Length: 391
Image (cartoon, rainbow, N blue to C red; front, top):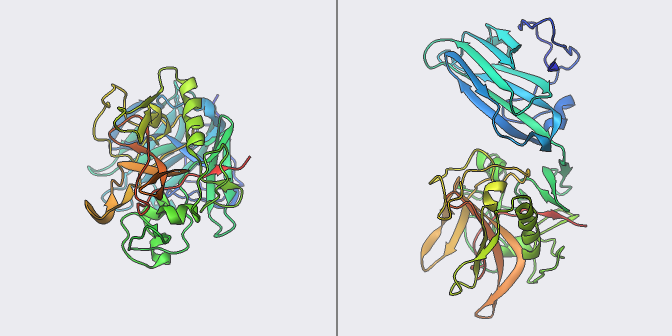
């Protein structure tokens, strides 16, 4: 029998008598994913299911998420529209036939309900019965806490980051968001910090944007590395912009990540682009394993090698798509390229181009299933950073 714990002291619900109700938890778990109080343990959560329910009845399977990487209990969210035209008049939700919620009034609780559910399976189904006017809806999603992950605090600014252990490595499960200042001009020699699509210079304003909160910061290589130094060891010795105890990954460390996933998926392998392109290579199909399951604007279904492109996020790396800050004056103006369609991560490994050190980078995109490696890119580009924990 599913164990479902009621997380609000609210008398608006009619529950089956089989349900266990926990009345002493009064913390509100907000729809925007932020939490406080006793539900802070769900801060490091991944979404495994989402449904938008409109008037009518529908039964939907949980899907193909790898539930083995999550802890036993999950959080089920229910939120309705916030205007009279979008708020449903009543809703009944069942999990594997067991009634979770039956209510005719969302208005007294800001249209939000949150439950803890345990022991769900890939075969589980959710049944949603919604009554309301055309245009009304409820949204339902389930989040789980990774069994091999957690959170840590960057002491420089108090920012809380998720992390995940993949093989013998521990990676940040989100992009670095350290922002000492924000810039709208380019440089190949001085540090530059960018927030996707923000062209101002007010740091506090930039940090309030949705793009900063979703995608973190884009750094040119002087801001990322904070020194002119090459290191391809595993682990690397370049802390760069990362918090204390973490560092910029080298090519060897990216390759170790890809190799671990490849060994877990025998059909995936490393391939170098044609020999005329000595600064390009890719791990077939690895990108799909690293991308989040939503938030990417996929341009096609399969890549040129026949691999499906959409994200699986099987290992909790949770790669999002902030795009990049272009810097190529003879070809492109300074500006953001590819929000929702691509992400590039700096490597601490470098190559020389016309006696200039240029750091390498790794790329995921909405048009490829692979994880790609590049070098000889101008230092003025703005890319994301994923830090790796020191050993």
